[in-house]
Image (cartoon, rainbow, N blue to C red):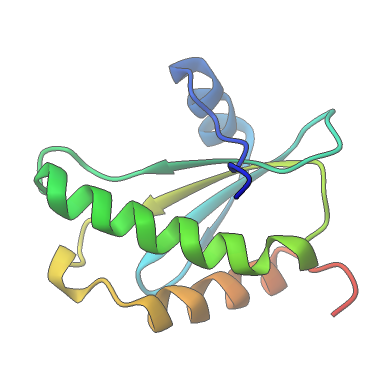
Length: 115
């Protein structure tokens, strides 16, 4: 199983959040910024004040799995940051709603390749 390429440093997140385009869905929001690489690099951020570690990790796993399943149909060369909307509760995290959000947002951002 191959690992996803992820943003790790604080300045990488700040760069995407300040310069990237913003798209919003029911449960997740996405910032997208073109990079100079030939791969997509993702970052996932969930509030530490509102959720405990178990809840944050569950949300991250759901987002990561949904992204993994659709990443091959996306255009390459972007930094993507996923944010969990604070107005939603962690118990409402739903695989299918996140999947709908991602597809809708990526279509709106015109990141789908040949679909």
